[in-house]
Length: 249
Image 1 (cartoon, rainbow, N blue to C red):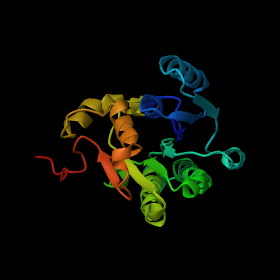
Image 2: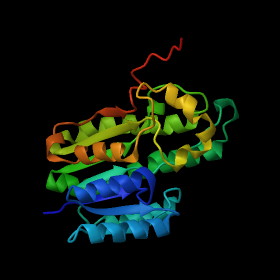
Image 3: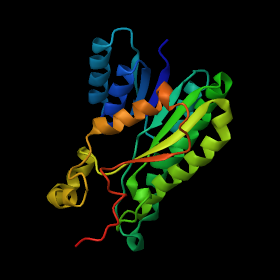
């Protein structure tokens, strides 16, 4: 039987790769998108054609809009979901001394608070069925300090702490909660740093950025049967970046 999974920010980039990986693994996938409507519809059509019998449903949602999230959660209340992957993220890079409070709070809303609100709704069904998987896409920014990342790192750090606590609270009910902490990924989000890419890659032990499919593969694994005993973890997928001491000779 195909089990239903919800993915936020699934219209493009890493989110689209996660949607593809989960459908290929035998799941029915509902995914949210904000502005990439055309890409989201094309993705759903491609996957439906490639995987007859699979249900792939794009759902428009602005995670920065608290009222919209409340309405969305009401539509989820009577639906049973096996998995939830919170992939949607909003960057905000600025030095802490010049941080704009409203922009920092907007990043926290999208990256963290939207996840907790949706998880709260989906947990009811998971607890009833005593089976469920929750995965949050965090960042190595929450694990290692980096100038200009204060607001973004704080939002991803909040995800890490929340997921660890939620994992403890739900483990006996057959639910796992984990965080994937990617390093630099080859997506549109890295476009502003194109000038610096070569220098950045030299500082990564693996010597390159991650492919979206490499993050998606980890997400699909965490929703698989062999991962049923993994919970409360943060798994860096960063080419060795966080393992490095960071002193350059």
